[in-house]
Length: 70
Image 1 (tube, rainbow, N blue to C red):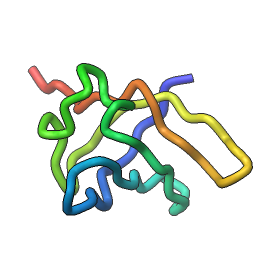
Image 2: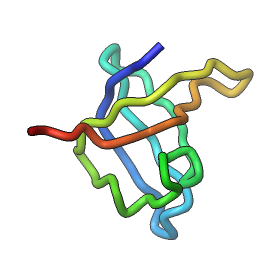
Image 3: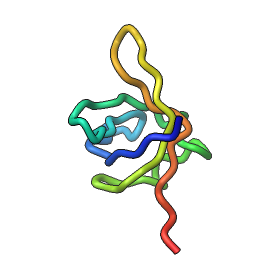
């Protein structure tokens, strides 16, 4: 299922970060979870779409991509 959220935090070494979900929870992501594997394609506060997985540690986002507005 496709989900939407906002980039909340990106680590200083740009290897991982967190997405703020609409309900206020957070989802962890790794740079390789971004489509194309390039974390520079997203920025703080940007709206993104992604798939979401619940793990024993919480939510993890994958297949992340920035919204493309026409």
